[in-house]
View 1 (cartoon, rainbow, N blue to C red):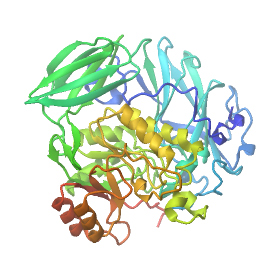
View 2 (spheres, rainbow, N blue to C red):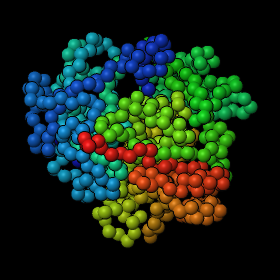
View 3 (cartoon, one colour):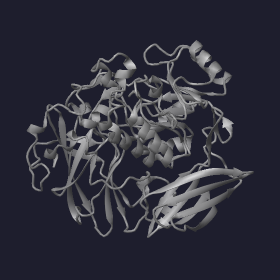
View 4 (tube, rainbow, N blue to C red):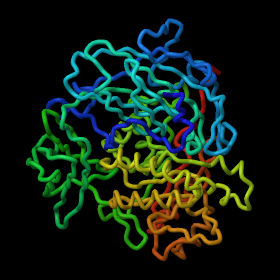
Length: 556
């Protein structure tokens, strides 16, 4: 099926993918679920480990029939999954900021497009239940076969792709084949300021599930006045529920029409300083899902950002998923080390620059206590160097104004929101980074506000808008006014006036999505910036660039 070249067809984003859903791992019973660790679920089967692997310089050199049963892979090497192939001697490390790493001609990509074939055997003891295959991160796109049958295709490097593989698996031995391309048409939207690496870099696993299981659900919390709160649960089918706090049962019941509302007296509210979590158990058909729920409410009033009625300040950092030896592959242990280091330095917020992080990262932020600005896997900075219109801002908006990219950008934003919607740590949705402003982002913002009205929206590149004859920009679904690296006197002047340029007539919280550039010998004016943060209620803080240098260990 790779010869159909889905990776070169901008109209094809996924093939045979399962419907999108929030992130969770189902369990067989309440005992497994209450451990809150996915490795303890008997319905979770990891496919991480050593895979057979072969690297090719382009599609024309791929071994014919690699996906077929009986293919002779004796000449293949092995690599660990998850990992990126550049850290194992294939291809080369490549750092790119503004430029694309290939000729810029959207949506076309070069024929000389490196790729890798991954093969692995696995065993199933029975096939009575449904079986789902999950990839949490693959750069940049991938085709999947099981036992020689084509399963599907997906792109977007930093969000989960899930496939119902029930028709393809069998009791006993099975073989999975995955073909990964370094670039695809989606690479035009993945021009982030970072090393470019390739491969299956996040976890791969199977989920065994009963027929009629809960497919997706949404949990929303509100403060209902006085000393009360409520948690509302919406699912695609009916379910039984139990809400607990520190092992004590708060409420039990059953949904009606896939909906349940749980009143919570004397709630323990969630914040970065006191990350109190409740445990919600959802049960149906012999399966139990445990969801950690944080009771908190985000509001904007008169241009001021409030959490639980308090005007909070983001003492934040931008963070890449990165390790100097393993590249994009970051273990849960490393995530924990980084988060505890941040706590020691009084950091309370993280911008996931510039893509969604691994799902387990958000679970850790829920538990340890961090405010997250969750950013979609969108950056199209590279067009600035290709097109020579009058202004830098106008050039950067080339893709943002192309109807051809409207659906792909919406796809990336919506997959992030649907995956992470139940995470209490996520306070803000970000549409992406440095891609200009136009109809593509207006569409994405409109969808987000219609799908989830409980969180504000962010997109810094809206400030770069340059008015074009005949265009009337729509900023009505954008809730924050965001800047990068503004001078102190400019911030003072703006905050004293209180209204953004080219914007609608309502005040919006002022946020620095990047400031105090701290890579190398940067990081100046920190004290001056923080004085501004605390002087003005409308200013809700910012995120230092960056948490850690993303350099490669080269043996010296």
